[in-house]
Length: 287
Length: 287
Image (cartoon, rainbow over all chains, first blue to last red; front, side, top):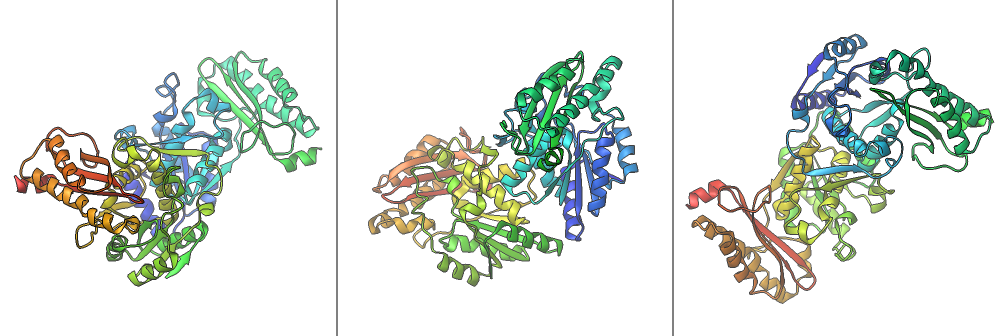
């Protein structure tokens, strides 16, 4: 595995790879890798000749009171994991390399951001869109892999790529979970032992909601109440509980679209998110 | 010469061209081609294996009271000229193809736009940046060619490409002029015979300004007065006269940077622009 730290070297490598007729799969991450990231690499390896992973904790997507400084980092361990997984290139630029000077333009996200994490984290998705656009130009992938744990991120990036005709296929990959159902997250390390126990209520609440929908529940308010009844069993503070259409992320009255049930809970030192997207065909089976 | 009208076909062609190891030169235009455009094609042919020209009158860069509807169009003539010039692919999408639905994101230009055409045409450069970003993703050029007649456009696009690390070299090309000095422009056809005579004052005023700078004039106010004395000999209304640093387009006090002298004059049915960039080395020769 080769480690590349400059944009120029990364872009030169990618251009050369493309010109030689090979395909590139891209797994963008903020590091502190877990099985969720590894499942993206696995998928990328299946579909492309060359797999590039980036590790970049992007300051632009963190709010002033958020955890940019204490976001967990462990490059040595990440390197080892990426290498073992079969990553060809690890792109690891620093902040100065990615943002060398004042930008002359701004990319902002107008749709799909007035809810969920976009509502709780103003400007977050502008930062995500900006860094993803830059990374796509630098890495030049044929396919880019994103975990559905950040389902809103996937929706935003799909919109971005369509708006600007970026020649890349966005491949959403399923959420990877611990045995008890907790969605894998780099931030899970910040849970206290008690919170770690309680945190299983997030996935349980979503399972219960999905079951209710499959049994024919069509009232978003009742679905939310059901979810909240689970989350109230934790010491965390509920940030949001939403039942929305996916990927448009709009309010729904009837159950005729793909539906996302999504939650965010703030624990002492970690804000956890989780979601479940129920496709219309799954519902049909349930009904 | 092949004509392509869909994004999908254009992108597929470009990807295939790149994968075969060939380079692509791109000349984006709004059509109604003149020798200015042809000089860009000539330069592109010298430096690339394949030359793609786009013709797209981009509604996004026209203000509500501007000339989008009556912007001159003549596809048959353009086709013939492009073919004769040696263009390989003419990309000619319609508005619905380029903007099929409401966009979910916005690209805005923050710097270099509070002056010159950016000041007179609010939102114009947001529209330019958006369509250029899309075209660069669709055509995937190694090099893109822009005329220095729109010097501010070149500065804005250079900023955009740097901000997002778009893997393309922006190649600015010199202004092409009529024998009497008038800068070639698709909009020149809308000048009355009298206005056409008067319009030579634009380039004359810029030549006089450049000469004054070379002779050591360091006062932007006196340079502007000199320019205005020429433009006042026309029946047009002066939109702006500016002396700025280039490409930052900031106010200057002393003559220590590359300098652009730029003018815009509104005639009855055509708004004409012209400029001259004086590089520091040229000034040094003059002094």
